[in-house]
Image (cartoon, rainbow, N blue to C red; front, top):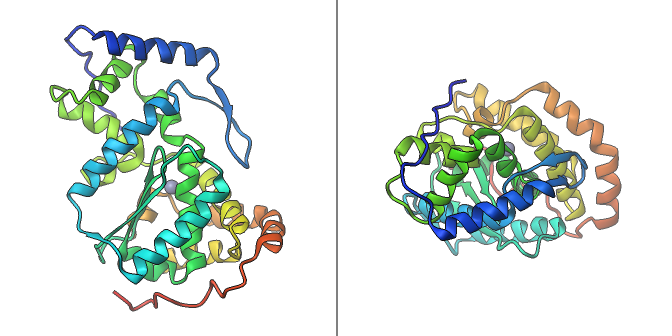
Length: 289
Ligand SMILES: [Zn+2]
């Protein structure tokens, strides 16, 4: 895959940028952390203090060009599932948001750093029920809590020029070239919307699946539904409607096998936390659009 080069900004850094750069340098020394659930050691150059505002700004920008659905029954349901799943992720410092974009043709969902989540209405018939929604919700929450964007951004931006460009973006600098902006937004996992495909790595996708299934189970949803969601996602693509969620989230039989490997652990968590209500009741039939 080809990535554009990041141009080195031509202006001198402001005091604020220098202070922020120092913050990053300090973080380099203590930048090792572990992902939740899978406990993979990762090395991030970019702390939440940088990523969260970046996620918030990008969220506003992304949603400003979409038709949002608010206050409807399905948006209320999305927020309910979102609150339950994000609660078990135990990141009270994140301000979680759950937007429903009215777009029946797009089968997709995404999450930005700091817990800014969006679902497209086109994904609802694939999710079919609240349990299905809870898996994709868990997957998206996991991308945020496992700092996948920060990890990728650290890898992709050349340190000196790239980090300086990131600060310029955060400061609302409009002089940045479009290709630089696209690289930053692409690193957040939203490249597809800009026609700039930059999917998460297979490693991150696999990890988000596993963590997401554990989150859904701890939130009280039956984890078996996670495997069924992937089957329905495949059916949607067989029917000629290629889900963006599938194209940017590489689909392999391997993913279902990974989920089955972790299933016994997920079932134990579910047994302790199962919700009293029937979360597998069909609320979005396959033909509802
Ligand atoms: Zn993903």
